[in-house]
Image (cartoon, rainbow, N blue to C red; front, side):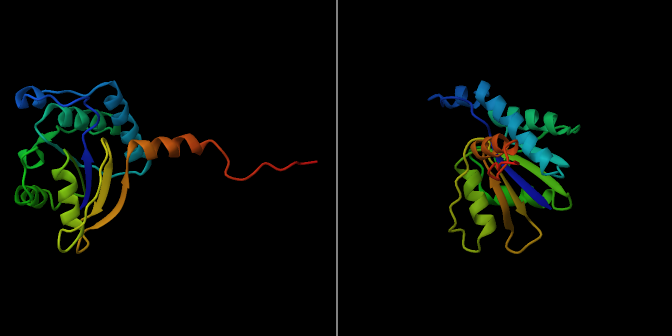
Length: 175
């Protein structure tokens, strides 16, 4: 299985009230991040067969927007194993459920998402991986320990897209 771990896109400032914070949706920048990162997944021909999201609104919106943009026609599944209070054991059970799936996109939150990633790719769990909002990590789960193939955030993706049209070679005169 190829696991794509994605941190939800920008949802503005957190709210002090946990009930209101759970209902916090994406802001305009967050929606743009979703479109950009979906284009990255399409460009890299990511084989996403299943999309699973945290139950919180900002993660679910991220999953749905990315899913729509990549042409995913299934229903986004909701799992508390990706929620704010999720633990690693629940995350492991989620992975086991989809172990026969070629590609899974899981959308969740910091800090547990990057902690899960660190534990996946190291034997002792001592690896710290920073995931900015809307970043996506590709993990090859068939390796032991699983192998982090790449980690791309919107800032990097924008820089790549901006440089694609430019030639890397200096211009020379053709006289």
